[in-house]
Structure formats: C-alpha cells, structure tokens
Length: 184
Image (cartoon, rainbow, N blue to C red; front, side, top):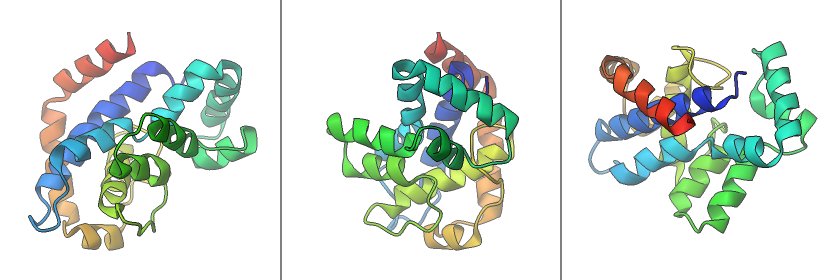
C-alpha cells in the first residue's frame, strides 16, 4: 500500500539526498552540518517504519485509511486511528537511541510548518523536502506548495530548490535502487 516498504525507503533516500543538497545551497553562516542534514532527511519518517513492524494490524488499518483518503494529512488520520503520530513515535525511538537533538527535532516536528525551536533548520529542510517530493508523488506531505516563509528563513529560493530536485532526479536510478535494496 501507500505506506509499504518500497514507498517508505524511496521517500527516505530521496529526502536524505534532497535535504543534504538543500543544506549546501544555504548561506554558509546558517548551513547545518551536512551529515546531520542527510540523517534528518533519511530518518524523519522512521516512526512509520516502527509502526509497520511493531503494530502491524494498526498500521494496515492506517495504510487503508491513507489509500481511501489521500488528501487528508497523515498525522490527522494517525491521531484518529492510533491516538499518536508517526512523528511522536519516531521521536521516542530517536530519544531511546540517544540520537542527536537535531535528529530528534526533525523526526518530531517535520510536519510542523511553523516550528521555531532550537533546531528549526533541520525541521524546515525536511518540511521543504517533503513538499518538493510531494510534487513528484513521493511521500506523505499534505501539499507540494513550498512555503515562502520557510524558504525565506532558510535563505533559499524556490527556483534553487527545483534546480536541486532536478539534479537529484537525474540520479533517480541510483536512489531507486538504494530504496529497493533497503526495502528487501
């Protein structure tokens, strides 16, 4: 279904590549650490993977709902079905694994458009990546619109985001292969 292993890992590897590349076009004084940016993109939806492995029946019900209501935000469907979101579940796991606070923030807040906490840059990069990927039918973002306020805070413009995405799409064979290998 829409939340299966191949779509999950495809979104994860594309997000990682996109977040890392977007971080590189930010002004140097504002630029996050590239390895952490990549990791934030890769792991930000990890709560979905945990749900699928540990709570199979609930995950299947959620996947059915996502398929039936593709325009509703996944976090809204999760709250109705599970009483918790993949963001919260993923953040709990990242805390248990003692991941860096930048990663925990990105996992917990990547659906929060107006997040302004200490590690907002990582969250905002994941949010922009999700919106960008949604325009290519990858991921669970509610919209493909790139919020101007977030782009302004990151000090990058929409044209540059789209140029970076086009470069990533040129290597889609490698990313798709990586996603397939991770899913199997």
